[in-house]
Image 1 (cartoon, rainbow, N blue to C red):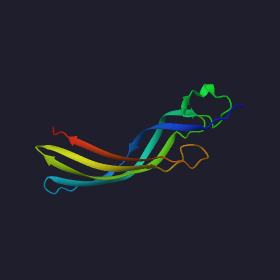
Image 2: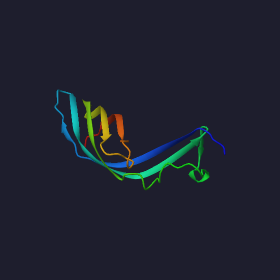
Image 3: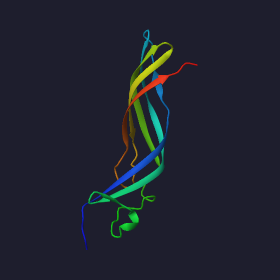
Image 4: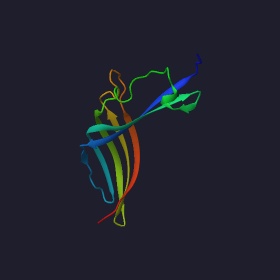
Length: 130
């Protein structure tokens, strides 16, 4: 029997549907904004990456490692929240935006575990007029 340090990483990809309320007052060219609301998320793809001694290994090469059935132990639906704030600046008819967003899951992603999702995003954008 050979033993070696190993690491298991789960990569989960969600399709999310937010329902947000927003407030965006205008002060000349500046328009700060805030938004928040619930989010429904659906796990549409999951991948497990296993590393032994720092090298990726295919799951089929591992005979004695048990950590749960990839499809059977994942929860498909997630309910969560989203909240963010930012600022827009209008110049020459285009609005440049900068905002930060917090997105968190409220339900466990793995059955019988207390692991949830969370994301922090910073976004830069341009609103093109019609």
